[in-house]
Length: 63
Image (tube, rainbow, N blue to C red):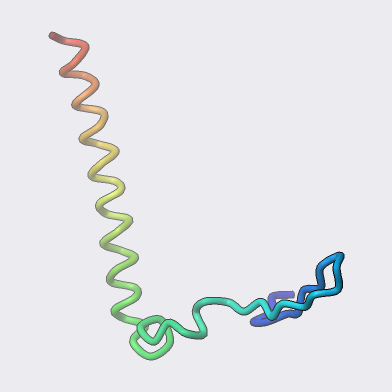
């Protein structure tokens, strides 16, 4: 089960409220399409970087 918040108690007895950061992210909460666009763009750039790294290694070995 996933919780949005929980209370953690340390060995010394201190208590901390633990919350998921998405509760305070207004983009993710109210503008889901912007969050999806950003996520898709990030994934695309990671893939581009992977391809570029491959070609850079290939060129380096060919020299």
